[in-house]
Image (cartoon, rainbow, N blue to C red; front, top):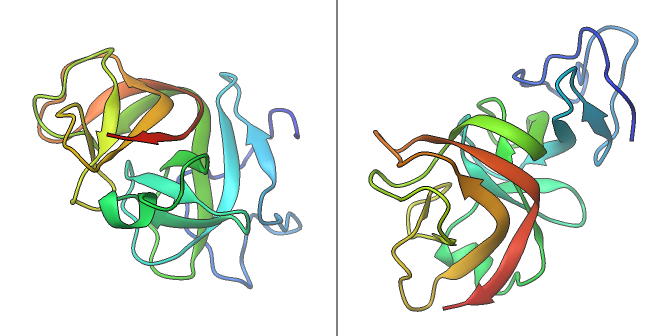
Length: 162
């Protein structure tokens, strides 16, 4: 993992030709740390992803907005939070460690509870719906309002089916 990198646009979206600042071509799966110690991984969107969406990360570093369909066969796979809005096949960053200011969580989801996938792409909830997958290592730190909440990530992954 690289240390803090001045000038990295963690919120940006990039095409294959403009993957990063001039002279800084990032590689899929490359990790970077910001000045606050938050860690991000460079990914390619597998479909539309909005900033704050929780994404499933494949071994090829494709980021897909997580839902109960794509998480069902992905126990153990890594999870992150998209930093910027990406269209299909664009490149960008997903946060995997540290404090996140805006995570897509269902309105009313409670702080410091086990979160699970939902039928809404990119959104987590604490409703314990049968058949949903739990996420370990990602917690919201305040009750979600307007489908967003601050939270903490500690290298999250899909844990188990409810």
